[in-house]
Length: 314
Image (tube, rainbow, N blue to C red; front, side, top):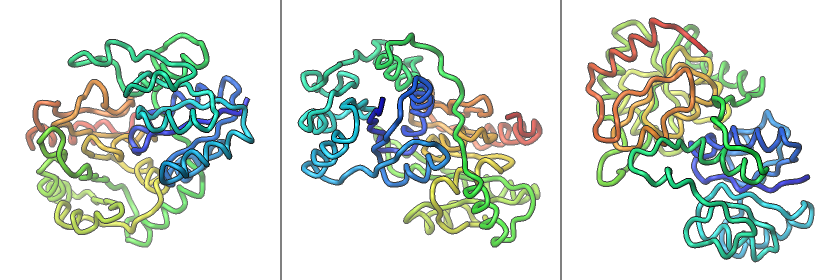
């Protein structure tokens, strides 16, 4: 059966649907994923079709109608918004999604959000949230999902090696990801001591590498003095860069989930977001900090030293 799937809009959330997508594919569904433009590169190693989502309300309805003509009429929405459900339903699709944002009447199959999801300090992780939606569609039992395991193409790995070689990085390296700008509930989403961490790593003899995204280069220059800043690249090349690293240190952000998805050794820094819901879904990650405050510099250094001493476990 050909199944349409609307991916989340953010990189981290899209990666956290990975176990759900694999579950749907294993059940025999040929997947057509509708999402942001970068999703095509992200899932290049899979036999899934990836379609960039149309921009705008009318264009979205038209896109769903076109897709309905070549598919079996079912769509599974990993988005939680009213608008995505309404557009898909107006296009004549049978919509399965969580009954969020008052959109229950527009769903062919409304899945009730687990009550524990709304509880303070909820133990329901976002990976479990998406995986349970796939289970509801398949009429299977809820499970504890496995660790994320993003496949990468040989071409993506080669592009990452070429970027490192061109920058003069020939041995082991540590990747720092000071992304996640802005504020969450009035508090900064970025750990403030990345400059000191970068300097400390360089003093210890480690090559420090970073790859800014669109519009991030100036901020990375300030946040990571002396680091090797690679040119921008697609998200699959970035994933390959993280996969081959000795260690990744990142805020709770899209790059943190990319590192988790490729099994990279990871120290994930939390200060304002919920560890229980968005911690890296990986056996190769260590979390420092909490939603009530950023970790101290010494706590991060301790975690980094321990992770470097342990080597690559995954």
